[in-house]
Each structure stands twice: as C-alpha cells, then as structure tokens.
Image 1 (cartoon, rainbow, N blue to C red):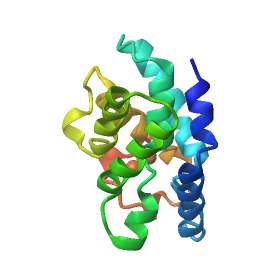
Image 2 (tube, rainbow, N blue to C red):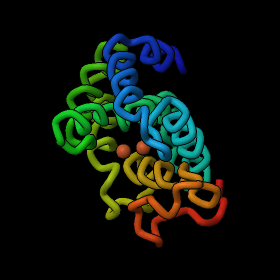
Image 3 (tube, helix red, strand yellow):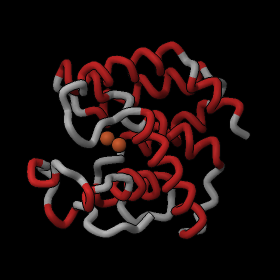
Length: 161
Ligand SMILES: [Fe+2]
Ligand SMILES: [Fe+2]
C-alpha cells in the first residue's frame, strides 16, 4: 500500500522543493512547511478519514499530505500562491512515482483547494485535507500566537487531535 509513497519520499523533485522551502523558512519562527507538518497533516487525515467514513486509500492520503505545500518555495520566490504553483509540481512527481493519471488528478485537485474554506467539512479528499491542515497547527501552545496573521476563529485554541 505504501510503496509509491516511499518512492515519493526519495523523488528528486520532492527533495529539491522541500530543501528550498527549508531554506526560505530558516528565519520563520512558527508554522513551518517541513516534513513534520506534512506528517502531522497525514496522520490527522487518517483519523478524519475514519471519523467521517470517507474511505480514501492510505497511499492517497499520504501522497496528498506530503505534496500539499510543495509549491511554497515558488510562492516565496515568485509570489504565486502555493496551492496554484503546487499543482503542476505535484502532478509531475506523482506520475514519476507510479501513481495513475486519475489518482494524480484526484490529489492535485485537493492541493488546489486546500486554502478554500468552502470545502471545509466535505466528506472527500478536499475536505479532509483542508481540515487536517488547519487542525495540525498547535496554536494553543504557540509562542508566536500574537504575531500570527490567522484570524482568531481560525486558530486552534483547543486540542482536538
Ligand atoms: Fe498550504
Ligand atoms: Fe499545510
């Protein structure tokens, strides 16, 4: 089940973008978009997948979580929103790692939507990614909470997952 995900972890383009993002975020004190964030998102997605009875395959969940912020370096360098920039990058990586065109499209649609609050509670990959991404942030213990530009109602001030 996780073979393609493990191939993805060692994909050249995936590694290149993750390293660039790490460099761009060196001085960022909170909410980085590193591998730990991606894995937090993946594991909360797994919980929501069961709770909402969505039945998304595990490898699709992990591929989506690992790739959802892959366009961040392009956002830092060129100002293009990362949910847009990430679509093309992620699609190419998914195909290289052996995911089908259908699976790759499924994942990249969720990436494209991951900052669209309209799909927040949807019982599908889009909704599960959106919710998990937000729930992954530990605002309740964040030392930078006052400096964060998230609206108050968006911040997680209670532990849920
Ligand atoms: Fe994001
Ligand atoms: Fe994220």
